[in-house]
Length: 238
Image (cartoon, rainbow, N blue to C red; front, side):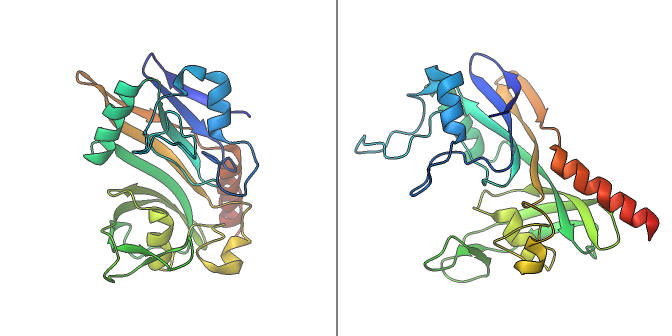
């Protein structure tokens, strides 16, 4: 697996996860995962992570503090020891990590900068989420701003303030601007526009320790750059 390590020290590994790579194994899936790669390249983290109450680990997630969907690329933090694992968990829990994503979406947003504040819940019997204000819904907030507009698409930054599953994808679809290529949200026509959802975890800003803050960036992958270049050409010819 071709995985780029962005940053590394005695406590932390920061990678740029490629699209198409599962973070950890799932029932019925036999493909290689990020956890497999970590086990080979950083074997010391095998015992780092959450320990279930019954101490029977059914899915190995060594060092994994947060995750990205299989077809979302971008920046991920992996703890190298238990103490730092707990430290990072606390930062995420207390919303002390600023997350910025880049996305290519359908259409043009009326407001070039704004906030989507709509609760998210899971559709019964599925993995699909929906934006509504039902009794089982959880708070979900996403800030966004437009970086560039094309003929029928927009290139944006999205900054989730909460950490719901599929949050950015659900929120953008809920306002009629699904992420290009998203097979779960946005319909068949939208899914056919790209080989995967054009969503990339671009940067994380946080305190490495009590005395040092940092912002780490994951460069856009080639397929994302090529899609943007195609839109540029189509717009210039229009």
